Image (tube, rainbow, N blue to C red):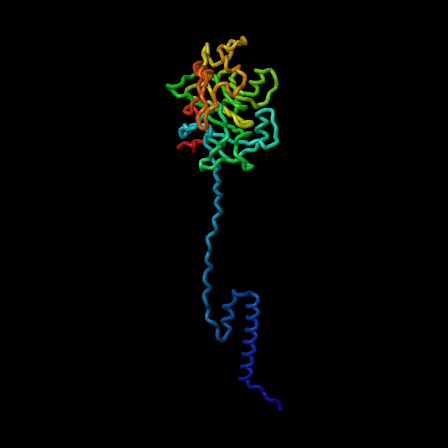
Length: 344
């Protein structure tokens, strides 16, 4: 005889079945939806765990971009050709140094620089006034060391520099008018003047020597004076940009001087030949411009070590004829270099 379920027992089975069905459904929902459904499961569990608050994540500040590295300043060499650095804080010339690699040849000063390697250093000059002398000491840096080329050798020969500056007339000391420039150099040198858009070559010592001797020459030559064949009109309130390229060939003699003098412009218009008759209206001739090169031309360089060369009568005659070394107070640094680091 089968046992009959009572109504009370049937209700219990029904409740139990419903509970299991709901528990299974919630469990599947929890597995599907992940942690976000934890609260729903907690309502089904008979003994739900105590909920623990999840701490808010700490936001780390975004790393700042790396600052641009500060460029290492170039070594600085101060005028090795003067006993004292005479320039003021805004005066002087800035120059880039070059070294001709061993085995390289050249026929012009342009080729010298095209085939040379720039040296990682800045050169500051107080003026261009180097009497003929021997040069074997090299370039002393501001840190006390001696500058060396890319092969680790001291610069005493086959080096060159490109100097840039501005020339300014000083009220009360100079007057507006025509100036003639000249270079005394051993070895080759070039002078250009004017703004970049209207730069003009005034002097190339090699070309000047070729015209003098009537044949092809090299830029290597003993001490020689080369004169500009035209004047430059200068005003008190206008700066004249200049470019000076110089190279030193074989050791040991060196010379480099920038000279100027006032010349008379007959009709005071700054023109070489304003009446266009082929005859300049001022005289640029000077006997020294025709002297053949010689290391004994203007100076006695055979002096005891450490003593300056001595000007001879030819040089003194230049001064009497109105030639002067362009003073450092008339020479200003180019615009890109406002302060001379060699000024104490």
